[in-house]
Each structure stands twice: as structure tokens, then as C-alpha cells.
Image (cartoon, rainbow, N blue to C red; front, side, top):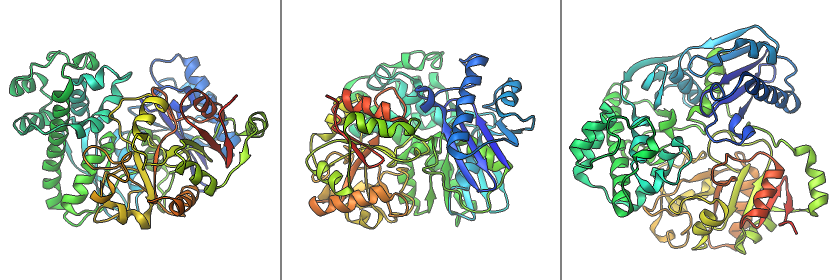
Length: 525
């Protein structure tokens, strides 16, 4: 049986599943069309939708052997109205509809975890089945046990929108929330405002929030009409508000979790939905409740087609799709690029030496990671011990805001030396933000955020052999065995998926080298 599952809302994605080989592959459409947060089901003509689906189908055929499709799975809140397009592209009339948004989030996360029994919290800006759903899961079923009628995801976005440092420099409203996580480290919590903001996450009353805080917010009657026009606060005041709103967000979530946990005190926790991208909240829950937590690499809507697939074809064992994303689209041209650019074979030892010399290197290897964070196959790496590296990356490579932090990666067995955590299991997807140990904060300045935190990725030889070998070699010549990792893209564009785009970044930014499938490319003449 060969199936395709489609989620067509923002962060649109397709999952392809072959039951004969038990293999899953995922295409995040934004990487095909080079538009962040791309929505397939709106803003496109029928012809454009068909052309994009044909591209996805052809990738599945040429890269993963999908020569036919036995059924098509679509999600109720992110489907395509014209079923004729689907039957035409995939040549089957067998269309299965999966009903609920948060059910798909829960299924996607649960079957990627190692837990047999778990409590699942799925929360984001909303789907057809609510905003904040709680499930109890075991190997036989996932059962909805509670629902909170509160839009934490949308509330967090609106909070971010009032800050000029964020809204005025953003191209899409869905980018606001992630940026506030970075900015809040520069502020001090205004304790008198925490409670009003906490209440806002529950009642979503923007006008009341303005009155209780005395902040005289803009657009109090229609904050959603154009969120980025809500921006008002600048400088230290905006940093303090960011810290305050993050604290209120955490307090609101914890007040819900504490009640739920009383009924399920022994269950590990899975956090999913767009809210699962808040690494500061995830880390706080881990530490304060000493609970095993799993956050998948794709907790946001880019994981929904996978969840819908699981709803129809229930897995018999844990599913790992971390590196089963979109393939390198022009892989067949690699030999031509090697000849044209006089690229040469390289080794982890050579890469480590270049890193130690202060070079910034883009890595392209195999099929892409799944989800919004680069985990080694589409990454930019450099030495985190160089003081000015964060500013260089933000201003001259990524072209993004000055306050945005960068993530470290290190071997799982080394993590305890550099970072603070009671448990380093489950940190392989950058889902948490442990503190850098005090004695290493000055040694690792470019991955130590203003609040001392870091969005750590742990690596084993099994999880990513190339990263593991680079860390081995870097450790031989460096003071630490930690390397900086950020996604291989530039501002406004999704993670790249072609050699051509990688070489464009190399030639047009301060990137020094690109490594594609172990070939080292230098800047063009």
C-alpha cells in the first residue's frame, strides 16, 4: 500500500508512506516554492495547486519509488476543496478525510516518541477542534480527556506584535512568536504586569489587557486585522515587556498543567502544536516538574500530514522521520558543480580545522531534516568560541535581527560537561533551552544567549554520524567539543534544498565554504 497525506494550510506539507517498506517521507512545500509559511489551499489558482502537487508526486516517484498511490489522506482543516485535482494528480479516487487538527498533532508526536503511555498537550493558534487539547495516549488509542478554550498561540503572537523591534522587521506575522523568544532574554520581568498578561492568554480580551496594564495598546478593537500594525514599544521597555509576556505565557501554561498532572502524576509528557516550539517553556517544565518530556522535530503544522497518516495507518513501532525530508533537488548535477567550481573531497578533520580557523561553513547532506530547525543536513556551522561570531552570522550571513540566538550541538556524552540539565535525553531536536554552565559562558560566547540559555542539540553516532565525527575532530584541536549550528538559509527564505541555492549563499554572503556530500566548495571567482 502506497499512500499520500496532505495538509494544505500554512506550513503546508505532504507525507508519503510505503507500507511494504514501512518508510515515511515528507515534503514541506515552502522549500519547493521558497516562501515561508506557505499555504497551498488559499492564495493559489487550481492550476498552481496542481503544479505544486505534481512536483511533490514526481519527487516521491524519482527519489523514493512511489510509482502509484492507493489512497489519498486529507485533513479536515487543511484540505483542498477541489478533489478533482487530487484524483488527477495521484490517479486514485480513494480519498480519506481525517477530521481534527489537534488529533493529528497528537498522533504525529506520540508515534515519534518512545513513550508507551503518555499525557499529550497540543496547543497553538487554533484548528477546527480548538486551541488547547489534552490527550491520554497508550499503544492502543489516543483519547481526548480535556480541552481548554484559550488561544495561547494567538495570544503569544499578539503579544509579540506590540514590540517594534519584532513587528517592524518581520515579513510575516507567523514569524513574530519565535522572535520574541529571542528578544525576551534582554529584558527584566515587570512583575506587576504578569497577572494581566496571564489572564489575556485565557480570555483573549485585548481591550481589557490594555486597560489592566495601562499600556494604551494600539488597535484594541481589531488587533488581528493587521497584527504588525500593533507595534508601539521600543528599546528597553520592549525588552522588558517581552520578558514579562514570556513569563506570563509560562505561568498560564503551568497553571493548566498543574491541574492536569494531578490526575496523571506518573505519565511522561508530550508537548506539540505550534506552542511546542517555545523552548523556554519546555525547559522550565522539565526542570520544575522533573518529568520526562518529548517534543518532536516537527511539532508545528509542518507535522500534520504525518499525524493524519498515522490516523489511517497506525504504526506498530516508533517512527523516526528526522532526516526523511525533501531531497536535494539538483543532486544529479553535483558532478557538474564539482567540475565547474573545482571542488575537492574533504574530511571531518579538514572541516574541523577550517572551523578552528574561524571559517563559516554550510553543510548539505542527504535528504533534509523534517521541521523548522536544521539538525545537520542543511546547516551552517562555525566555532562558538569566537566572540563576534553571533554578530557576523546575524548581520553578514543570515541578514536577520541582532538579538536572535544561535544553537550549539555537542555529543550526548559530552553535554553534561558544558550544560546544566538533570537529564540530557530527548535533546536531539533543539526542543529545549538548558543553561550553559557558568564557567563556559565566556568560552562559548556565540551560543550563550543573554540569559545564559542555549537551544542545545545533542548528537550520537547513530543520530548523525557526520556531525559526530566533526565534533570528534574539533575536540582534538579546540578548547571545547561544542560547535554552533544554524539553519542553512537567509532571512525571509525557508531552509534551502538545492546545490544552486547553497552556492548562491556562499557567493553572496560572508559564508566561507560549502560542503555538499563531502565535497568542499570555495567562493566563486
